[in-house]
Structures are given as C-alpha cells and as structure tokens.
Amino acid sequence: MLKEIHDFLPCETPQQWLDEALRQPEVLLIDHANCEKKAAATAMSLLYRYSEHTELLRKMSQLAREELLHFEQVVNLLAQRDIDYIHLGPSRYAGGLREHLRKDGMNVLIDTLIVGAFVEARSCERFAKIAPLLDPALEKFYRSLLKSEARHYQDYLALAQLYSDADITPHVERFRAVERELIESPDPEFRFHSGVPAL
Figure 1 (cartoon, helix red, strand yellow):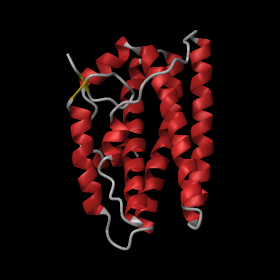
Figure 2: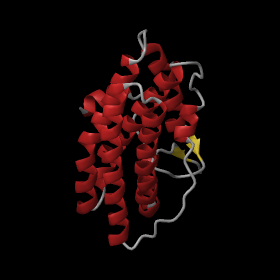
Figure 3: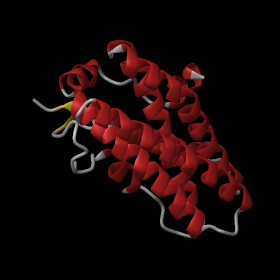
C-alpha cells in the first residue's frame, strides 16, 4: 500500500520536515489532532452538501466515524503526556490545495475529493516516515493509522472518478504540481502538513 501512496504523491517528505517534527513533538501532536477533527468535519460537510449520492454518503459516514475516533485517540495521548490542546492556526497546505478547485457544477465535488485523496495520502506517508523516529507508544499508534489513512485516500480517489464523466487523471496531475510546491517550498510555520521549515 505504501508503494501505491508513494507513486501517487509527487515527492517524499523532506528530511528537514522530519528534523523539525522531532524538535517540535508537542506541535506535531496538537496539529495531528486538528487534522483528524478537520477530516471528520470535511466528511460531514460532504454528507450534507451531496446527500443525493449514495456511495459518497456511505464512504463519508464511515470516514467521519474513523477520523473522530482518531481525534479522540490523539486527545487522549495529549492528556497522557500533559500537553495542553491549545489553539494552533491552520497550515497553508489544505487551503493551498483548495485554491485550485474548479467552481462549476460537479467539478467542485470532484476536485474536493481529489484534494481529500492528497491530504490522506500525505498523512499516510508522513505517519510511515516519522513513526520509526518516535518513542515506542507513538510509533505503535502512528503505524496503527496507516491502513485506514491509505483506505481513505483510495476512497476519495475512487469517488472522484465515480462522479466524473471523464478521466480524472489530468486533474490529479494538476493537484500533484500544487502539492509538490506546498511540500518542497519554505514554510514559515511547522504543522503536520507543512513544507520545508523556513530558516
């Protein structure tokens, strides 16, 4: 599954991000909680906005439940480690991808689903990269998330193709270029999906 993820993503997580994650483990965990909460909220939003699409309802309801469970698990980890769940501003990542959504008709849904696939694939890739560098409890937890994150990526991509009347590959490629820029360029803030830490 990780090979498929690596083939889908335009680049690997830079070593500089991994180094910064080890320097800021509290921010990593807090923003991870934020990401799980936002993923559940995105799935719920799609449920409400596209209630006529049965397969989307089925997949997004499952995804929302899983993301909320992950959120609960991260909140518990924060409590166990005496880390306050403080407010953090969002990273530029998801917003940077969403800037390139088409706005017309079903295209906004298709592009939103493609963006969801990139977010989940990048999460999976980062969990796999950072897990061996963490303490045993966190390593075990992050490894436990790999299967569901990979499935979420597949579900988003399959739904995007299901609701498109044409091959979505050109649009996937369009977002691949955007995603590469967001991951490889200097980023002023460290977050779970941030780019290369700016000096």
